[in-house]
Amino acid sequence: MNSEDVYKITDEEIKTLVSNHKNLIVNKDWDMYLFTKKQNYISDRRMNIGLEYEYNSQMWDSIFEREWIVMEERLSAGLGVERDMLNKFGDGFFKSQDELLAEVRELTNQLETMTYKDRQVTIYTYEDFNMLSNQGIFRDSHFILDPQRKWKKKIVELLASYGYSIIETFHIGGEKYVFVSKEGQE
Image 1 (cartoon, rainbow, N blue to C red):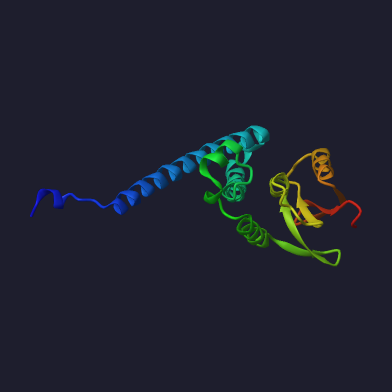
Image 2 (image 1 turned 180 degrees about the vertical axis):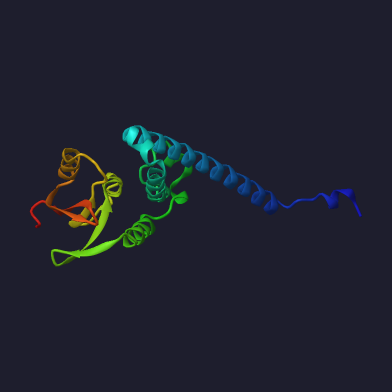
């Protein structure tokens, strides 16, 4: 046997190795991009919440993780990704937006609902409403909001900025909730 035959690699094998190496680098770069985005997001959220975070960090960390899952899915579809990063990874790298919307529907279907004012409505926490609205994927015209000890003025301002208003305030299990409607759709 000739020594040249033992180490012979085909052009197809070289192409496969190069392609696999490129995919590993792209996936590593994407993972680093997501890691950085997540760290910045959580840091910003903690800073925005301020001292309230310290009183119940476990609850807030849980909320941040739920928010991040939705945001990561959104980024995986290329939504909210900076133009230079979109160019770096290419359009074929990202999930289709139809897949993302189906996943968001599945996530929101898991939220608690109740019948109120003769309609089935979803109960959102202030943070969930804020996150989904900021991403442009909040679609309910009527819902119940758990304000999570936020100041009424802040809640009213946020809701108004998205075209919603508080219709009624009520209590469930000693906690304050509000029934919310898209303005003009009581």
